[in-house]
Length: 171
Image (cartoon, rainbow, N blue to C red; front, side, top):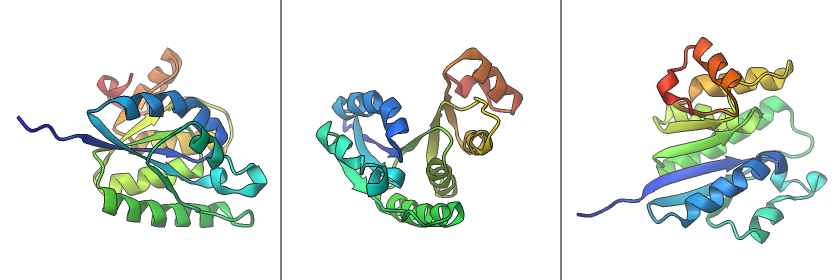
């Protein structure tokens, strides 16, 4: 029997989300059943925020695809447009089975939009949480675009169910 590796793309845009994704990335990259690519964008690539893509390299994260989606002068609208354009091209080339996004920023929203429109499954980490800021709206939008949800607590799970998400897809 011939076994085909599943292709997984993990999106990271900030030091904060990378801190939560690092252990997942390392674990998946060790598993021989998966072929993973890491789409590195956002603040990771800006000198203003410490060029934190260096941390991923130091941690020996493999298969990095570095995409500069912004300058320090770009508006949120321009960042959204740039990220959708770049990630859409990346998806066309890679054709993954799954895209994993985290949180509530403009980059995971852009990547979730691109993945949904290219008929790629999306897993969202930390959906269903509230903050009372624009982040909450972005987070809920990402959740609605996603197929699978990994929540941090039962309250977030209940909130996703209230939003109409299938409880069988919430972990």
